[in-house]
Amino acid sequence: MKASSKKKFFCHRLGLAESEAIGEGTRVWAWAHVMAGARVGSGCNIGEHCFVEKGAVIGNDVVIKNGVAIWDGVQLGDRVFVGPNAVFTNDMAPRSKVFRDIVHTRVAEGASIGANATLLSGIEIGEYAFVAAGAVVTRSVPAFTLVMGNPARPSGHVCRCGERLRPVRGAAKCKCGQQYRLDPKSGGLRTVAASAAAKKAGR
Ligand SMILES: CC(C)(COP(=O)(O)OP(=O)(O)OC[C@H]1O[C@@H](n2cnc3c(N)ncnc32)[C@H](O)[C@@H]1OP(=O)(O)O)[C@@H](O)C(=O)NCCC(=O)NCCS
Ligand SMILES: [Zn+2]
Image 1 (spheres, helix red, strand yellow):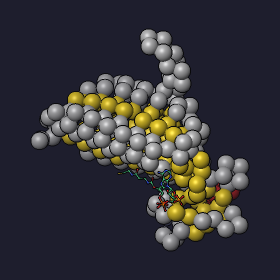
Image 2 (tube, helix red, strand yellow):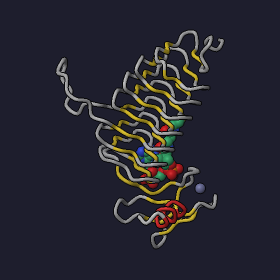
Image 3 (cartoon, rainbow, N blue to C red):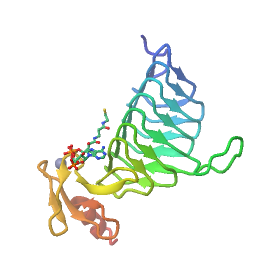
Image 4 (cartoon, rainbow, N blue to C red):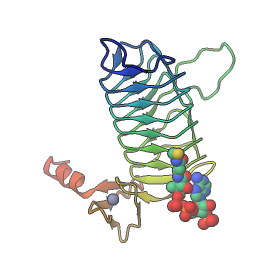
């Protein structure tokens, strides 16, 4: 194994990295394929047997475990984690050789997708949300919210650090010190610092 010459990312000799837009320090492992026209940030890890289609957008420091396809229309924010064999989709009514507009899916910064979870398209996974292993996600997931099951339903809240949170009277504080407020509209959480900044900005 040696780093690709001139390129600042690493591609295993059995991997295929055709995109011109792969960031520094990203590693593409054996039998993984990144198509031309896909955008991948820096510091990412793209595991064995992954496929990144043209039009897919991947942020920085994203970890994609083995056997995941990131299709056109899927956008992953910075520090997203995708567990092994998780499934994304971009067509809600697929038929062979019937070509429709792709339906987009966005996974916001820091969110985690559990092993073997399936995400239907046209949804957004909020920042630092957590999709349990094997969940089938049919609706958008609010920030810092854990969903599980088929169909996936909210089952609690999770801190940025990964600890479970138990909001009391609309507020939660994690062992790590981070504080949150419940967003009654979405059912998700907002970091206290973020809401203070928003207040200052007059929003
Ligand atoms: C969702 C998750 C975070 C819950 O962890 P937890 O809070 O420790 O949950 P527990 O193990 O205490 O289980 C609590 C309940 O949820 C259920 N549960 C746990 N994980 C579940 C899942 N993925 N789907 C459905 N139900 C689940 C348990 O059966 C249990 O139900 P019960 O109270 O009726 O017995 C964890 O199970 C999970 O899915 N982690 C992701 C692992 C993964 O995919 N890693 C990828 C890298 S290898
Ligand atoms: Zn925490």
